Image (cartoon, rainbow, N blue to C red):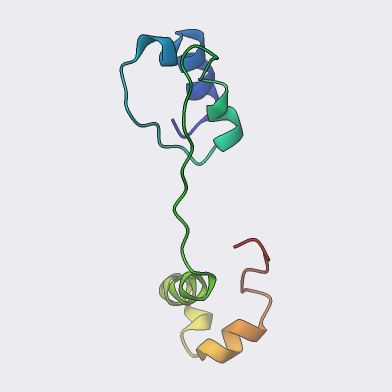
Amino acid sequence: STTIAGIKHAASMRFADAQVADVVVSPLIYETNELFTQKSKGRFFAVFSHPVNRAVRLFYTMQEVQPALREWTLERYARSTYVENNFVT
């Protein structure tokens, strides 16, 4: 699920114990952990984009949405406050 309410609903229905799914996909990793029990354990895996590739994709997407950025270069974007500044990603 992509909502906390959806995950709580699934947990209340004992989702993991029902063994109806092989994979759970959600950006809410901490909340999704609550679906699983000691009896019905889950495994976590993650897929990450390279931070430079992610920034470049975001730049081109933002250019489509924000007309003011259409005249910008990638370098100008990289030095601006628009660029993501998260050392984890």
